Structures are given as C-alpha cells and as structure tokens.
Length: 115
Ligand SMILES: [Zn+2]
Image (cartoon, rainbow, N blue to C red; front, side, top):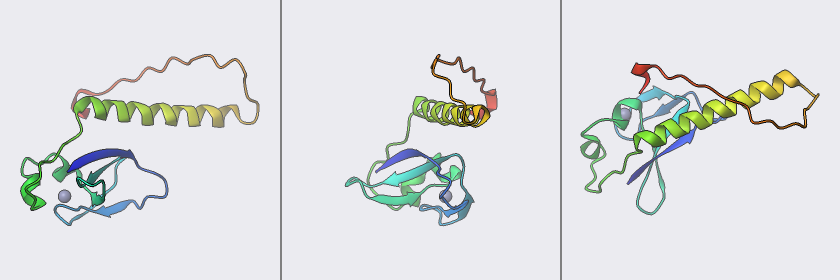
C-alpha cells in the first residue's frame, strides 16, 4: 500500500472519513490518499493515522505501507503555495496581462513547528 499526497480541490468536501480509524476529520490543503498495490484508492487518512506507527494494524493489513518522504511533503506544499501565489497574482493583474514573463522570486518561510 502507498500513501499519495494530493492537492485538495475546491470540489472536495471539507470533512472526510478516515479509512483507518473511521473517524470524520477536517480536510487539510493536502490530502493523504491510501492506494493498494493494484492502484485502487482505499480512502483518505486523517492526520493522526497518517503518521501513526501502528497504521498497518489499524488497517488490518499485512502489506507494508509506503509513506511519503519528508521532501515530498515540502515539494507538495511548495507547489500548492506557488500555485496560490500565481492565482492571487493573476487576480490582481485582472484582464491586463503582462507578456514579459519574468520569473518571480518567491520566498517562503516555514515555521519550525510546521514540519
Ligand atoms: Zn484516522
């Protein structure tokens, strides 16, 4: 089994039920979706179960679970942040579009406890 990180779309409900503990939880900006070996979606994981050491037991599976690496989290967060920045920027510019296409310097600071 594998946990994939997906950007939460605006069409996604704000509450989902966790596939491991069956508890409803608030959806964050990134969804943790559990897939089985064959690539079938098993469901969403809540933040608690996502990092629970006994996740395999909770899911009652003998299959090893591959979790996303820390850098994959960073990367997903950065992608979402930069997408959001571009959306704000294009909204600010309105219909007057600029053709210069200069790469923007985006500086993002993470807080220590945000990992
Ligand atoms: Zn859970």
